[in-house]
Length: 93
Image (tube, rainbow, N blue to C red):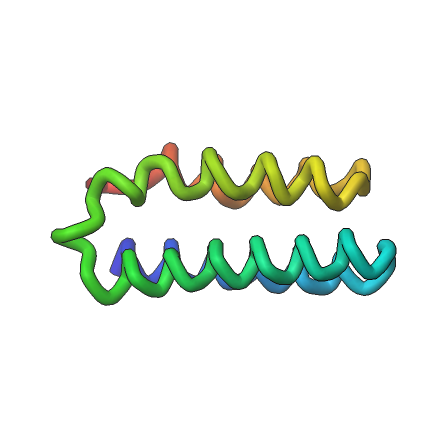
């Protein structure tokens, strides 16, 4: 159950960054969409093969989300950390 919730939260964060990518310039937009697609693709891999990718699970949000927040330049993008912090502090595994 925890893996499904993590996947859902990561999907919502990915959707948020894709929606934020509609406003900036073309270069920033393409970079945001590419990094967001990579972030969600790795999230799907973690959901499908959790045993083989345990060490990536701990680093994924800490590597991708700060970069995405910085690239957007939106001051409210920092709030995308809140659901991820809640998920990491309340998980059972």
